[in-house]
Length: 254
Image 1 (cartoon, rainbow, N blue to C red):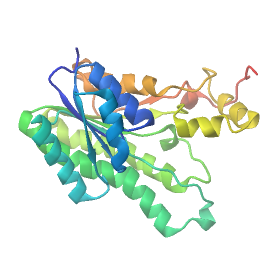
Image 2 (tube, one colour):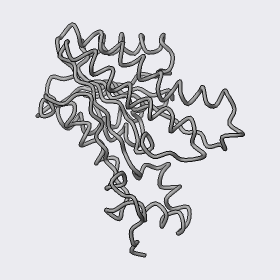
Image 3 (cartoon, rainbow, N blue to C red):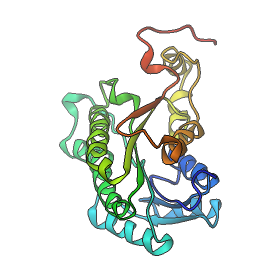
């Protein structure tokens, strides 16, 4: 197994893409600390079984991040992989967007990746290796009018990934990003299936003619976590069904 004897921390790990990443990394042999702000996330770790543990934390707060690292070291003794996946959205027109909502999204989506990345990297430096994966989005490249802080935060994630990679390469630590397109998490399903019009709009912008599954993103996370990606750093891989390659709409099968 590619990740045997490795220890991973995954934030936002109890649903959607984060949960799929936890399940896939365990399948690949890793032991995983699943982190989420909701304490009832422990049930997701219990469902995976012994290789997984749960820690409740607000990863936008340094004290919580330090406690997360300490708990991982106590439980597993090392940190080899970090998947920075925690994130939120907030919809509002630019003229109506409140300062506190802008700050909250940037704090959770971007600042948390700095805090977790720095804390995990300090442990990885001691081992002379490591892999950090920052979850970005196609919306790091494509703007949505009513998603101002989300789009800004994901653009920042791409640049954070690059600057982390440049700083940490000398220590044998790789830093890469994943940019999902429309992935059928439970939240996304509500948007995609909200109406035939919503489904048509999304699929008309996706050359592969379908939405992605969380497991398809998790497969890239497993690759980037492994030695198969040993010469990759500073890159963001887009799992988007061709969305970013498209500058027109495509016919949709009804």
